[in-house]
Length: 174
Image: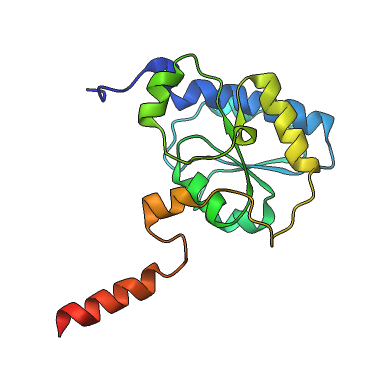
């Protein structure tokens, strides 16, 4: 049985198919830009959606995706911890957000509190924002995203969660 908040319209596969099509078009129009598509492990994907890809798209089907972050400028995902990893790695974030039921979506999605520039509200808007982010100068010393989501989900916005845990254990085991 499916979860009570499950809605076919909000299923990632519909958004995924549209996003892959946009990335394909973007790759064709920008042959010097390399695009990595990391397929979620265990995803029942339609292999046909990854056929006839431009040469500058690489499909990765195995292993964890976080190791590719250091090579990435923009992280594109929807409602996955990959977004938290992208925020922690200080990468540009772009979320495909072309849904019809955004009221329900707000109840079930990760609470990221990102800016409107991080959301593609239509396929055209997504393409335009992707182009802007790709062409934007990236500076690793400038904070690219709001870190509230890291604090909310991980309690580690300041990178001191390990120290706090260590202190807690020492204080409570003695």
